[in-house]
Image (cartoon, rainbow, N blue to C red; front, top):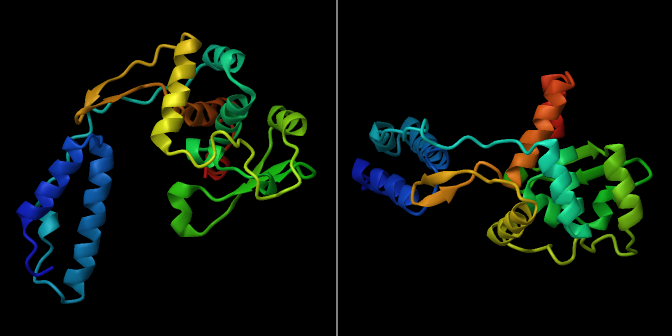
Length: 223
């Protein structure tokens, strides 16, 4: 740490951007480095926090994610396989991220209590499970679709274990088949689309907000 320089942190920041990370993501990493070095400085391990002198990137040019409309979702459900139908419903009614949907197991489904218990991979370090009440439409789907004696068996076997990029590509193909315009622009060396699987999460939050669901409850549902 004593040999770390501002130029090293700046190079780290710029390499992330060049690799295709969007400015908001890069800034998140930079803030993590700042916080770690701040602690090291406070504890007397280094004379100063060199990362504090490295500017955050401008996030104003990052394309805004757009929620999928009801028409978009209806079109997707019409062209989707049963597994992808379940994925879409989980994103819409629970705000689950794409890998959390894909890796769901039968043991995490409690059809008697109409709930799902899972731990979001993105925040798994918090070691906190979320108990998600099932919307009647979601419960109806799982009652008809989910039937496995092994609680560790994946609900969506052909999608479980796939990396996020492969899952996103699969959903992009569905958007194209449903005739949904994705929008987007190139940022940080890669294309950022306005409509993706994450847009279901935005739709979930938007629909709850329009139904005047309190903000605290919306935050609990979406983890």
